[in-house]
Amino acid sequence: MADEPLVLGIETSCDETGVGIVRGTTLLADAVASSVDTHARFGGVVPEIASRAHLEAMVPTIERALKEAGVGARDLDGIAVTAGPGLAGALLVGVSAAKAYAYALGKPLYGVNHLASHICVDQLEHGPLPEPTMALLVSGGHSSLLLAPDITRDVRPLGATIDDAAGEAFDKIARVLDLGFPGGPVIDRLAKEGDPKAIAFPRGLSGSRDPAYDFSFSGLKTSVARWIEAKRAAGEDVPVRDVAASFQEAVVDVLTRKAVRACKDEGVDHLMIGGGVAANSRLRALAEERCERAGIRLRVPRPGLCTDNGAMVAALGAEMVARNRPASDLELSADSSLPVTETHVPGAHAHAHGVGHDHVHEISKDNLYS
Amino acid sequence: MLLLAVDTATPAVTVALHDGTSVVAETGQVDARRHGELLLPAVDRVLTEAGLGLDAVTDVVVGVGPGPYTGLRVGLVTAATFGSALSVPVHGVCTLDGLAYAAGLDGLEGPFAVATDARRKEVYWARYEDARTRTGEPGVDRPADIAGRLAGLPVVGAGALLHPDAFPGARGPEHVRAGALAALAAERLAAGTGLLPPQPLYLRRPDAQVPKNYKVVTPR
Ligand SMILES: [Zn+2]
Image 1 (spheres, each protein chain N blue to C red):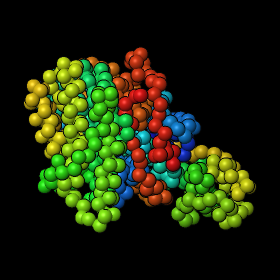
Image 2 (image 1 turned 45 degrees about the vertical axis):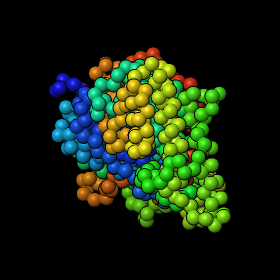
Image 3 (image 1 turned 30 degrees about the horizontal axis):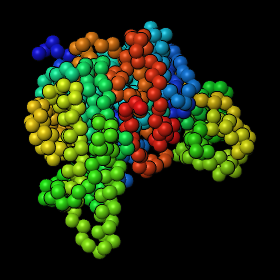
């Protein structure tokens, strides 16, 4: 519908420079420039390399998105941007660009939460989110179970990883197996030819006294690495496909079990899965199977919308406009540790909430000023 | 002609409007930690003071450093985005050149040197024949390693003032001013020479450190 808000969204929280354009819940453009290849040899994302790449890609990606959507910048109803959480220096490039763009065009600016955006993107695929929405977010940076009664202003963390993110575990095991970075896609591919029951790797935090919705992948990672090292020490071949399948099974077993349990406990009859690890084929299959058995409807966006992108930011921005939420102001800052409960960052004068939250800022290795 | 000039390559967040003849409005703040928050409100202030809208701007001028990366990028991405949104050209000027030009406006004649703080106990620096003429490319070095080469010269800027032992000729101006940057750009535009592409002068390779837990998200 032409009267739905037309919003451009900018995402630079990690290594993807994403610019998306949506009209309401309709995706019009999703332009992404990734610096993932330049990080590969470091086995992880290097903040300064990511920030430099964002600066180079920012304006060309905005222009590409506008062209792809076939809309003029003057027709936009708002500019949305990831204000956090993420890498401080990387976020700052997107936030600065969004502010300049909004100011130059005279459009309202919406600094939004990266995690809420991961959930909201599903509106572009499966229509308006049910309220509340149960969401499992899994990627190289986050593993969380979130309950969202209102994606624009009420997102509640039920659980999260207490150590490594799920995607990080994939990267680390891929490194132990010399499979390169990122680890997710290659482990998924090899696991298809392996036996998921070959090796019984531990399921973290799955005891009856453990927190019901928190995750832990650090013990699993160590256990898999030890198993591989023991094989190597004994001079035996490492059955890479079976290790990949058994490791992957341990991860997705815990993720889906806890997500389905959260749905049942909270009386929510559907589950949304987002984040880069949502592209994992076994996670999708097992979630489908368990949700079906529990009478839960599963919503997983296509892989391109699960990884970091600008469309998800635009989707949440459009929802902010549609629901008349207060805009951010020109002082909007990037907040590397923006809590998931802060779905957006309204201007200081717009709203009593949102200023001076008292969370602890990340002690960052990516020095803001070097 | 109306130039909008911004520079965030040093602790100064500085913005000016220049009509091709003189500075129309200028504002700035020195705060190394808040470039991102301060720049857009500063742009808004100079335009309000001049009673003009951003659409009156014909050219954007940006200091391309060298400077500490995170702050430097705020000015560069802002300038590039303005250029795209307004369909106007964006011109780069070496931040050290802007500071040299500001020293010239304050009455300093050449030869002299300019040094800004590069952190990690180093300075970004360059030598100048006069306020408009740099000799050689900007460098990044420890003060003690270049003190001999710059002996006897006035050395302008915070990088010099921070290291008086290495630079006894240290003097102001301490920071670059966008008004000076704009005036220099206006001269170069008129002469049709000397402007740079709006790309950062980092002068250092990125530290390749792999971060751990780079997105810690749940409040606990
Ligand atoms: Zn993400």
